[in-house]
Image 1 (cartoon, helix red, strand yellow):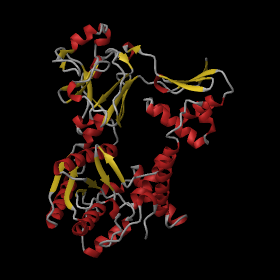
Image 2 (image 1 turned 90 degrees about the horizontal axis):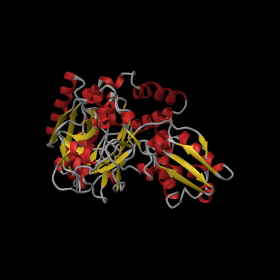
Image 3 (image 1 turned 30 degrees about the horizontal axis):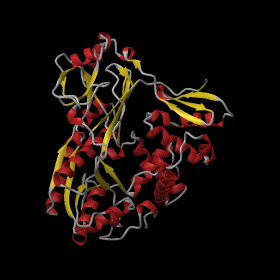
Image 4 (image 1 turned 180 degrees about the vertical axis):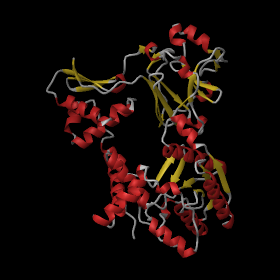
Amino acid sequence: MNAPRGSVGRPVRFAGLPLDRRLLPRGGRLLVAVSGGADSTALLLALHDLAPALKLRLSVAHLNHGLRGAAAAADANFVKRLAQSLSLPLISGRARVAERARRRQLSLEMAAREARYDFLVRAARRVGADAIATAHTLDDQAETVLLRLLRGAGTTGLGGIAPAVKLQGVRVLRPLLGVSRAQIERFLRARGQAWREDASNHDTAMLRNRVRHELLPLLESRFNPRIRETLARTAAIARDEDALLDGAVAADDPGDLANLTRLPVALRRRALRRWLIETGAPPETVAFDCLAGIERLTATSRGTRRLALAAGWSVERRYDRLILHRPTLTPARSSIPRNLEAIRGLWALRVPGLTRLDGLGLIVTMRLAAGVARERPVRPGVWPVRATLSERVRAGRALALRAWRPGDRMRPFGLRGTRKLQDIFTDAKTPRIERAGFPVMVCGDEIVWAPGYRIAAAWAADEHERNLQVVIRKHAPCSGVIDA
């Protein structure tokens, strides 16, 4: 069976599996993520066979997610014995995924994914690996495309799992993306190689498992016996077309209505989405209903009209131009919870991602992107606020918000020495009612940022690097057109 063309590429058969050898770093060091399941066991064996020809130096990484008790310990022991049999170094780790899920208000699946990639990036840096190899397969790709289709997705989402991505500055490769699970199991049986089975993969309470065990077999038996290959090919086409469409709108100025209205609708929406994101607007503003509202705004015959977007942002049509307005800065008094007990602990933040803090009435958005935010700080207690933090300094460590405490000090960027937060509030004339329970961003015991003030000097970002772009704001729904 041939893997789909396009972004996945034409695989080359080697050691019984059609690995995509073009992804592999010739003469490099590769960290192989191995759970002990069939997919990752086959990946490790195939790469071990390939290593002499490509001069690859392999290391093995295994994470115990702390979810399956004795079964997880048996998985770890299996991987240890497998690495020893191949004379490969092993880096193992343990995570508390259930605790992470509760702390970050995530599903177990999402918390496990975050913990796994955090561990893999740290392990890759420890061994000096050029890249991480994971065992995502053709079946994983088909499941992902169906899941995104069920939830609603455009071209970007339907691109599914990319063959290669960068995560926290480390390349992640998926050389098995064109290989089916059936091929993998045949490969392992031919070699007499055992593998571990995870009972949770059969729990149909999880949507992915229902897609895997119910929807895909139904589509395969009743509609298309090669549905997995078809969906993977669709993903490859979507990724290529997504890149092409991005390039097609790169030079356009969406604010110029003459330029915008000449574009086909697909490019028009993409140009508007790109314009909003690059201007720093929050993710809610690029939702379909907001983009459709802006399109309707461009269709009006003449004059001035305004559309209220999410989080206090708005777009104004002023004759032949669109103008994006940032939220009006307002005091945060209404955002302070009456029950200050709600913020005496830590509020863990998703990095990157969006964290809704209902107790504070705030939303924290973090994304990785090049550059440094040039907005001047206003003062503590005024929202929205923005900052750029060095992702290199963070290096996978957790960030959180907590209420400021008497005696808190920080070393502000651009100033000498340390300053008490109490003095910062006084100098900024922050009212006492707004100081009560004021949230500060921390990494462990270190204050990283007092929102509305400067970041800590140690977290200063280099504009030429990929940094952590942070926005804290109040939340508002997308509304309709307002006559100006």
